[in-house]
Image: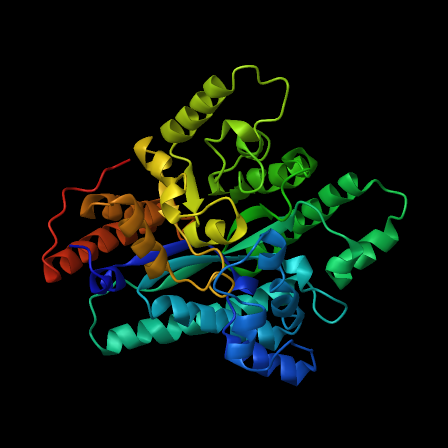
Length: 410
């Protein structure tokens, strides 16, 4: 039996989690007061009732909370604090490795440049990592060490109101078509994060494309992704969340995606809109077969999808069931711990309860997370780390008297 205690004890990953979607509410309130930022309530209960709800009617309501979280993340101290607390929130529920993502240009301004944003976030994460691993050593705990990577997000689209950086960019190019400007911003970010990574050693492990998907195609950002691809940076792309299989195809072919964020509509023929696709069934079969064969991992976010798709009446109806049947490589993630009121343990519990996961299924999914991570050290060290995770996982199975077959090497 897969108990809550077993899930909590397991070593876990979270490969798709947004920094600005994971603030602690008391910290948000405190930082808002310090920065004189107006909130609809200054109590946790009040914010849970008005903003960070137990469920949402649509994507617009879901995204409303970011208005307040992003507002307090324009100071290095706030970025550091949020990163530090997020790292500890992960560690305290048994997450051993996670990759936090955010869009740095949402936080830059005249007093805080790109490198300053990245340094602030890394400072908080590194401090939590150091404290957590020192605690393991002092307690002689056999658990694998805690670690992290940083993923930077380009935006599929933006307006001048998104941030001071985007306002300045729009004002500097008043005659440039916006689709062209989206690509300019992404390429500038790509150049910047590669330089910061190489100069500072900050573990920037991946590049992402986030934001409004429908109507804002991946092809606008090919130069940026070509650039990071040529500089040996891994790529994950939000795709198939608000658009369909064609968006996932673009992420793979145009942006060299190593992983897919969400992939929610991968298997949905109704979301294919191009007249060039004459046989929708065959198109999806070929695409899903390619993803399966290449082991492109899909970062599945059950609670988040439930929050943003009003047509999804039950977790049991989530396409994760079909992904599992097709033997796709998947890993379960939180997306936004605050906005979706979730944890990695909760996402695993939902999957176990609604998709009849066996102990072997659960083990494969969790180990996929470690294997398909953009681990910041070299491949030999990653293999050693994953082996240690597998051995530790076995010790937790023994502790809880769980019998599991060998992990699928794929």
